Image (cartoon, rainbow, N blue to C red; front, top):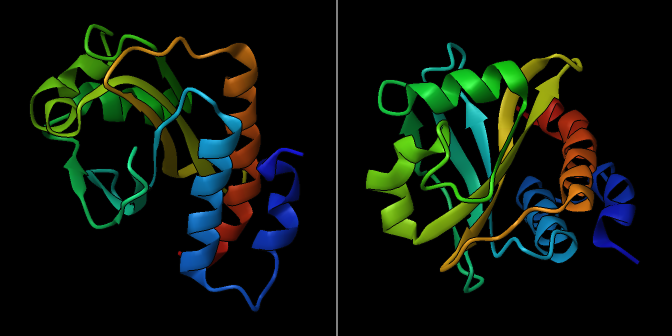
Length: 164
């Protein structure tokens, strides 16, 4: 059974800590989106000028948080993801929207493919993103993987919007 199938019940449990819920979302993404080996959850600030990583689980299973990305440095990406809610970039280093990350992010983390979906507040206001990444080589994101990530994002939206 996919981990994402049990996600709503887990996220609605008031006895589970915020950090454990974020970790569970990441584990579900890594498990159910097979090409993803690095996953992170990012939160926009109020004016969309920056986003901060709430959690990242890298390709080695190491957790981190607190990395910041700024719209002044990655304007094409910020504009696109806020207005379109999804970015599918199998060859992220060559993709028109994501190539802005080549220096300072992709090179630092060895990222070659990107699949990002926003999560929202009140079903329409972007609050942040769930980011799937492939390190080391290019991944061709499959239609079912995109749908799985959208589904996980929908489940995460309510929990995250109530927490931040």
